[in-house]
Length: 448
Image 1 (cartoon, rainbow, N blue to C red):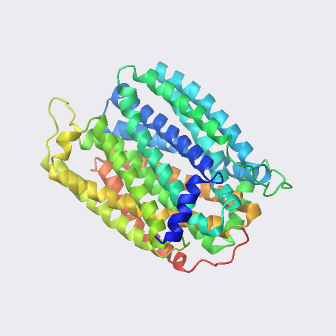
Image 2: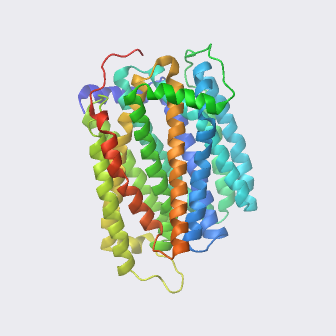
Image 3: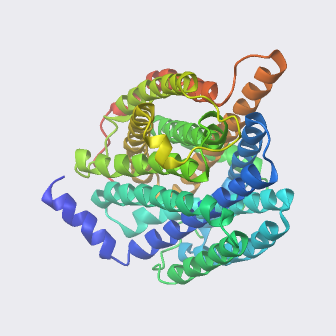
């Protein structure tokens, strides 16, 4: 990274144009994952200690429910973000989060799986409305040469938040008085997020005269037509959607993989999730360093090649582990310390770290390109189109994972968590071909 790029990144972290938004989205992502991981740990380790297929089923249902609102409400979210002042909308969204966490606390206390899943859906809904705002507000506050550093920090922050939510979610709720601690924690973080949102500077209304269309499907079609009119924007949307589908499917398999394939306790599960999220953060920061703040797609396809190879490598280590390690006969789970003493673990860890770091390298330039090349008065709606496509891919990924599990059960085939990871890794190959046009240079002129 050049000295200028270092200075730009450091200035962003001190600037009111960026820091309050960064902290607000960090706390929101942290709370999403704290709640989700606590909920999954409570379900998998306490309420439903059945087979790996049952655990994988519940985990994939949770992933699908969280993403479904992005498909249903993103068109409306994009319109509202372009029509109204963005910082005010963020404040209302953070109040909404506080209410959800209060009801979610009751779900923890009663052990009501249905209620917890409903709250997870509600969290996905409030994230749907926050998503277009947090990305579209950046080009309104920042210069073009600040977009890549800002997106690098935002993505690293998101995955650091995922890491912290992962580290604390399962151990917190499974500890003594864990339900009370998890409930108090999620509510407190939501309140803190509302406070930081109060410091986000106001913006001009991007398109105050647009008419809000109540037919979300018609508006979604309109937004997609406009996105498709710019092939590079549309391919960027396809690229981000693929990344989130791959990531969501991968993350959904980690809990059942840790519990039923690697025989790990909740701390071992957390360690694997942590390694994946650390890799994403490393890749996000590394991307900004390598590109020196320039918006470029030169490393998009190379990153997918690394993800593909690491996915195949990971599958091989899982097969290797299953043949080398016997399942504990008394049901006792393996501790993190015992797990890391096995040499296979280190090979597995390198595969996960390489895969996730390549993912961070892949995603950051795509968001910067979407912001830079979108019309200023339609940026939120472009991001909303991106979120709709993201959700479609992610829901399809969750459905495909469920179908693979069901097919394995019905036909008595060896199709389980490891095979899902292999299949989704192999599907990176056609994406390498599809995204080739993204390697062309980004126009240097900008209307922002």
